[in-house]
Amino acid sequence: MRELHVNLGENSYDILFGSGLLKNLPEYIKRVYKGKKLFIITDNNVEKYYREQLETILKDYDFTFYILEAGEKSKTLDNVAKIYKAMINSSLSRDDLVVAFGGGVTGDIAGFAAATYMRGVPFIQIPTTLLSQVDSSVGGKVGVDLVEGKNLVGAFNQPKIVLIDTSVLKTLTDRYFFDGLAEVVKYGCIHDENLFSLLEGLKNREEVMEHIEDILFRSCDIKREVVEEDEKEHGLRMILNFGHTVGHGLEQYYNYEKYTHGEAVSLGMIEILETGEREGITEKGTLERTKKLLMQLNLPVEDKYNREDVIKIMKRDKKNKKGEVNFVMIEKIGKHKIVKIKEEKMYDFLYKNR
Ligand SMILES: O=C(O)C(=O)C[C@@H](O)[C@H](O)[C@H](O)COP(=O)(O)O
Image (cartoon, rainbow, N blue to C red; front, top):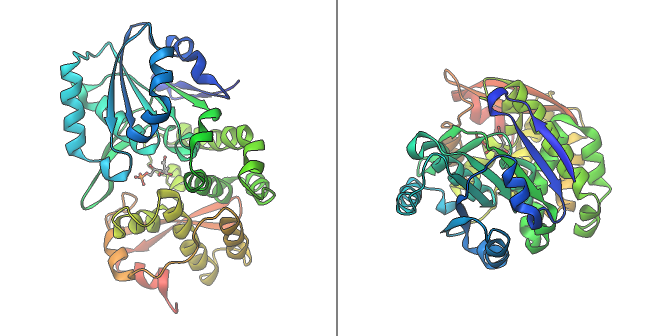
């Protein structure tokens, strides 16, 4: 087993990595929680595979399960209200523990409910998708979507511990496996050419799995470093959003039906690299190299969407300040740069001559 420590003063926590961690869940829970009452939030896909196993492992606890419909469309305030009701019905108090057991949607909504129910109940993250293991379970961004846009309501609420069991990845479909790798490509682009090169050498899922602990550890370590420096996203943390300005726009434009989060981020990264090369910000060849890698990972690199519509959505991006959009650009693989563009110039900046 490997461990990372995220140092955020009184909000510090550990991330544990290993195959088969779930079997010793009570031991890891006891590191941060001595009580007996658990409120476990998961979704109907994950429940199918792991509920029985969890019920056996957690037999000495008094637990309640709350099951969400799998998918981004569940990340709503309506569902948060339903979760609060179930929390009240199970007499959950501030001394108890919320467990987010699932992918990014589960972690985001569970973390938000935990942040706000009775003004805060502690919670832990047990991510079960590759995307949530490399990204969303770490760093404390929790929240829900509004019809106006993705993640528009939320909080920074750090978990008490993150438990990453690599063995649960075996139940992921190929589509969701590669979805998670889009975020790893992102880390490579913004901060680590070696991680990017490692992925370039891996030709299929089996080969990726041979290196999975290194990939997870390095991804979470990059995230740790950035979040420790800028927990509340006043500056540096924006780099973790590379590809997300366009990506979130596309997810919403297609009503969360056409693309998974990672697929939309893949398209978003390509748009920004094309812009970067055309504007002379990005070293020539970076776009082609990234495109090749994303295609190798079965991720989309081209889509004919309505640009005006997606620009409208992007105007609500949380990185926008005083009428300017902060675009996370890449100078070369491993080196990021934040570029400010006036909102009214955004269309030309992204799509001029294309
Ligand atoms: O943790 C962060 O900071 C990120 O931006 C990581 C993103 O990969 C992640 O998808 C995040 O949830 C998006 O955040 P948002 O602030 O753009 O809603």
